[in-house]
Image (cartoon, rainbow, N blue to C red; front, side, top):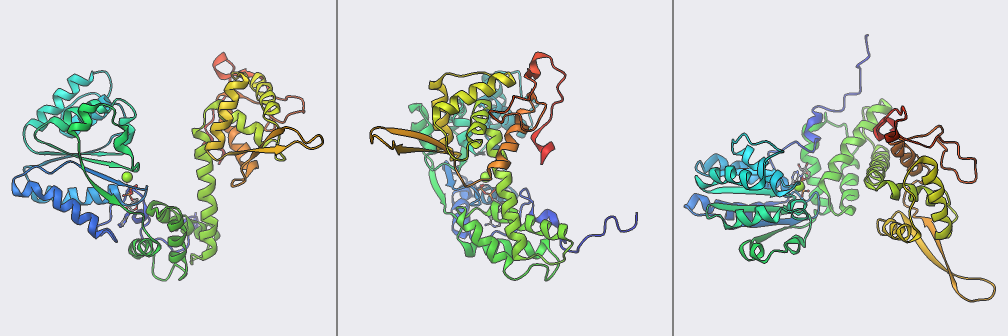
Length: 412
Ligand SMILES: Nc1ncnc2c1ncn2[C@@H]1O[C@H](COP(=O)(O)OP(=O)(O)O)[C@@H](O)[C@H]1O
Ligand SMILES: [Mg+2]
């Protein structure tokens, strides 16, 4: 077994680059941290903080900074309860999570909102409570307003809402809620390249052995992340993936080339996840478009869709429905729908559908086939090739076929 685990000495402590890692110093957010400290610090003067809304693009440090300030506050404000949750569920689910945070043994399923709220209220009634609702938009697009209604009217409670969505308040429909929840806004601007560079430099010092990174690596990661809306999460990801590329090469030095390879890998992963989020019909439709790199009329694409759907036992759809789905794919940036003047008699226009070219079509097709394979049974990878004999066994998994379920990750 000698040498099996011999690897280039690159990482001193890989976990420092994990997204869950909470750094003990934060770079480039002095003003935002000061604002948070100012308002939440009201509890130290015997008051209740105003409700706050922390907004900014993903990866701008919102969660990190709020948790950083909350942690320090909890060390000095003994009589204040601080509850944190990612509010990505229904009013009931979020309330149950908060009640559990406060020490109540409520189930995450099975009770009603009112009962769960009663438990949470008992905790809140005891004294000033700061309730941090991260990604609050996810709760508001469900029935989360119910919880916001009760929290915002409770005399002991301060709400810290966090969201990537600048227009999050417009998700509130109930006027009773919008009249009681009027938060002060703290805006987190996107990081610029030099701020990202600073963040990366601090992490890299702890994460890597000395002189492991080629000099241009951090500036390059920072510049690339600056172009992705200043997303610090992306910057950290890029750096740690670049180091992995170097390790796979057996090198003890991370180079600019490794960063570029890592960029491609992140892109691939992003496409995979985006495709996974599409509905089954959207995935089949996208496949049909990807099969026609030189463009095809929507009508032919719809025929092809229904041909394929029948073969694999998926739902067939009307032209109207398919046209809606195609427009959705266009909005999501997967396809381009192009209008072309008709040649010859010079009258009328034709529409053509093309794959949008910012992704690798062959790979995208493979992801689709494999994702469909979790529900349907195929005999061949090329099952959807049109004009070829359909060489697939049209058997839906639900219809009792002995289908081996696979997940997408099995294939990557
Ligand atoms: N100012 C900063 N200093 C150090 N690390 C940061 C900073 N801002 C963000 N990060 C890191 O970037 C990642 C994304 O930050 P996060 O707070 O989750 O962003 P958001 O909540 O705005 O989407 C986290 O891993 C975090 O540790
Ligand atoms: Mg966050």
